[in-house]
Structures are given as C-alpha cells and as structure tokens.
Length: 412
Image 1 (spheres, rainbow, N blue to C red):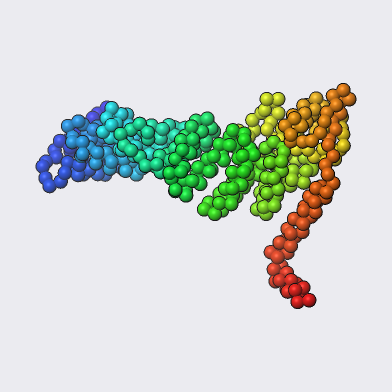
Image 2 (image 1 turned 90 degrees about the horizontal axis):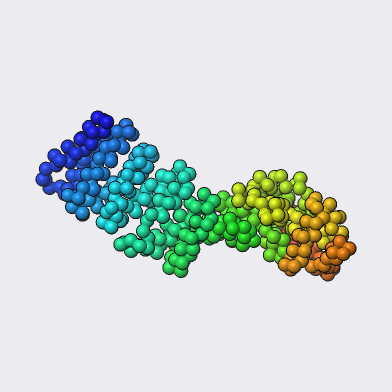
C-alpha cells in the first residue's frame, strides 16, 4: 500500500540524510526513532509500520555492530511504552528478523523476549508467554548468564505453564530451577520456588505433600498476609482431598488448631474430618465450589477425587462407631454400593491406613478396637482446645473485664 511505502520512505529518507556530526551513528538513529514516535504515536497502525521500517534499517549489515547493538537495546527498552498491540507485533517482527543474527544480538533478543512475554502474560496468554521465554538460550548461547537470572526465568516459565494447567511442561523447568537453588540466595526466588513446588504437587494429585508445603507457606512472614491466607485455604483443600491416614490426621490437627482457618469457607468440613464425624454428600456443595479444575478430575473407578476422599474418611469414622458391619450396611451408610465399600475398605487396610479384617464369606468387615485411653486423651484435648477458643473470644470482646478478673484471681 502507498501509505506503507510512504512511511518506509519517511524513515529511510531520514536515515539516508544523516550527515557527519559530533554525534555517533547510534545517537543519530535514535533521533530518527524519536521523530518516528512523535509523527505516528496517535496512529497505531502507522506507528507499527514506521517502527518496522526503522527496525529493518537498524539491522542493515552496513551499520556497525556496536551502533546496531546500542540502537536495538534502546528499541527493546521502549517496546513496553508502545500501544500493546503495536508492541506485540513489532516485537514478533524483531525476533523474526534478528533470528539469523542471534549470535551478534543475543542480549538484545533476550530483552525483546522478556518484554513480549510480559505483554502476553498481561493478556493471560500463559502458554504463548512461556514459549517466548523458552526461546532465551540460557544454557546454549554465547552469553553466560548468572544463576539468579536463569533461576528467575525457569521459575517464571514454570509459573506460566502452571497457570495453563500444564504441569508436565512446568515440571521440567521447575527441576532446572531446583538445580540452581544452592547457588541463589535471593529470598524472593526461594519463596517462589516453594510456591511452584506446592502447586506442582497439587497438580500431580500428591495432595498430602502439597498441603504440607502450603502450610509452611502460610506461616512465611515474607509473604503478604493475603497470600498467606490463600496458601492456608489451599492447604485446607489439599488436606481434605488427600488420602485418609495418619499423615492427613496430623495435617487436619495442625489446621484445626490454627484459628485463621475459622475464617475460611467450608471450615465445617475440616472440623468434621478432624473430629472424625461422618460427612453427608449434601454438606459438600459449598466445598466443591472451591475446587480448581484439576481437583475435579475423576479417578480410575469413575468417582471424583473429593468423593474418594470423603468415602475413605467416612469409613474411618464408621470404624470408630462400629465393631463390625456388613458390606451392604456400610454401603448404605456411605451412599455407595456394598461391593465398592468392601473394595475401598480392603485397600485402606492393605495400605496400613486402617486396622481391621474382612470376612468375605460372611460379607462382614471387622474393625479392630482402638485403645480407650488414646480416645479419651483425644476427647480431653478437643475440649481443652474449645475452652481455649472461648477464652480467646472473651479476651477479644471483653478484654478489660477479662484482665480485671484474672488480676482478682491472682490476688487471692
């Protein structure tokens, strides 16, 4: 089109009319760059064509390599200041044009990739943003990058792939970042690595491991309080979804004793699990809304991850209520077929997550009786925690009265 030719001619005429002066060639090119911006800044379409014409001139082999690097470095710095669509298109053109000379302009290509990745991330194009960063030759290029920079890029790629819910692609870059942990002392990157590791365990359905990592993050003072609460909520979700057993029981106890959990939605499910009470399907609606897409996946037997976790919990709860129970009775209690109840119970017993035996001829499950004293201790512990919670609320609502009462008792 004539318009494009005119704009290309405008840039070329400006560059060809450059005359010897006290300025370096790079400074002269940058003057033309500024003129191009001022002339077309109100018209994104024209600006795009003008910048592309300038880019072609800057990559001309007749221009000295030192000047070309300075011009392209400045060009890369200015990309974020352009209109988003213009910046995105121009950055893509720049990367394509510079590909044949990437050895000469490796640093400038890296800067352009970083700028383009941020633009795509702002548009929530997670995969495209990650793929742009993957093109940075951190290990194979001529430039030797610092370990901190490499770890930063690897973690960013992992983050973006996790946003895309592609944990397989993310894992490769998270592992590369892990190899650099010992060399990098940056606190922010160390925390980011922990966050990505927790999310990775979550995506891989290693919910107990994910919960452990999220719990640790919820106590990290360097993280913003809102982010700590988000980590705590994720810890609660992963703990509820994890397989029933001693590990989950410990995590349930840790979360139940954390007063912050009382502010979280669906705390009632956490409370019932900790107190080993049977959970009805109708009680799960509020909790199910909190689940991410990957947490709603189905297992090999067709049930959801949440269904499996709740069935296992209810079987453990039933073992505290019954000495023995038939397959069909247990199935009725759980709301599932008796055959499925037998299969889940058998798996839990074989994995050492529950004590009991199964008589298949009589179709009866015998739960091994637990000792009375540990149960009694747990009940006393639960009462003490509830009393402490009441005292804390009294101190919060009626602090002066509580202090006066305590002083009066101490004086006697």
